[in-house]
Image (cartoon, rainbow, N blue to C red; front, side):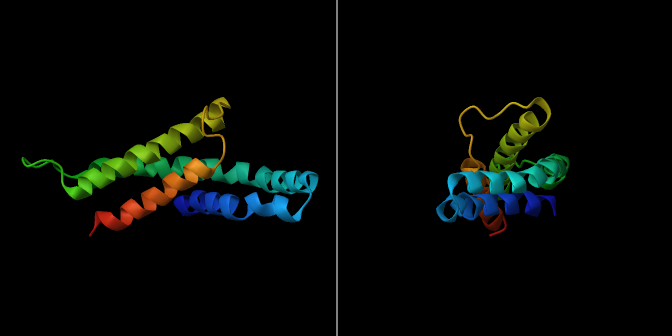
Length: 127
């Protein structure tokens, strides 16, 4: 549920809220966005931390044993997903608790792309 909350926000922000300035004047768009974000900030960062925390908890169990012939495709894709998820988690943790804004990627487009990549990798893990 937490992953859907975080991913759903990124989906809504990138595909709908970003387009508000086309139908509203800049001042109205800024006010509307802030009215929504005021409530988003109370839920979404914690949903991200729950998602990353449960992923960290489950990783050792799901990853499995490394065989003599190396990592399986599943383990490789899971490792990539874990890396991307940890990056999102560290970014979110720094923003939430230390008020450190991202240095390079200040919009939600990059996290949205990472979530899409994580979803796609999930689909290929079991093929």
